[in-house]
Length: 370
Image 1 (cartoon, rainbow, N blue to C red):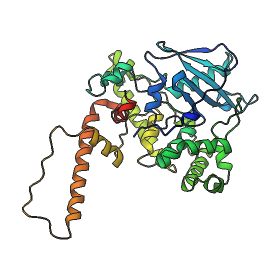
Image 2: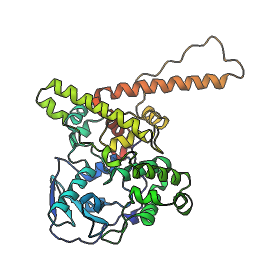
Image 3: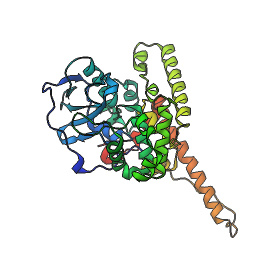
Image 4: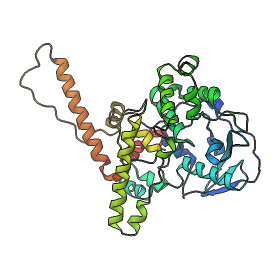
């Protein structure tokens, strides 16, 4: 499920102080913190992002094209500090103005600052295992500044989780734009698409993953789809509830589910996206309804949340015939899997359009939900 790829302590470093020295102050929702965003993110902290938890700091590389700033440098970097016990972030590295405003918008998207989770937190208050989510206002997750970067990283993490950091570092170094701090940002779709497939497959040693990533880049570079069009700021369902407008609430929920269904169908057409990659990518896009039903998710749920009553074994009149024991075991395993699916869906049923988000929180390793 949602687990952060391996990180090396030696790579957790923050750049020297940036100019201007005076930061831009960005208000955050009450209780906002970096750590839960990182823990809940299906891609975690991967290059070119740098996160230093002890300093409450995150260094972010932002493609200048996102901010309409083509002349100065291909990739800007900002240093973001959270202020302990305060609902604010301090963003260093930008002079106030239109470019900074655009950069701040990207930072807010990456951290889900503007995401409406009021209804979700209300629903968590009623769940015995997720009361802490409501209490600490958890549910936002770390994203990349661009949807394309998220698409590629989801494929990498899904295919080769343990090597994800190394692979992203290779992609940035080989194809990424230089930053103002002499590092490299994440490569754009057009840059990877214009490379030879063999450069990813053979030169970088990515094998089938390199081929998959190259094909994904070609699709995105050709606008099939244009990645940024997959982003959508959902209207506030909490506001509809507070206004006691039941018709508006039903319309917003119906609209959200229809949008998520369209996104699911589209993602399934992309190289590298199947039943394991689509749900976490949807969460990064702010869509939280599609539950993960693959074997690993079911096994984790069954282990973490066993049935309160032991399942009765079916009585048999005689032992299975010789040669059919394996078939009997397979059928039993299928029955058990179906029972786990039913239990898990029943457990998530009360979370409305947030079933996937609730599932990812329920399946967090204990040390990451502390």
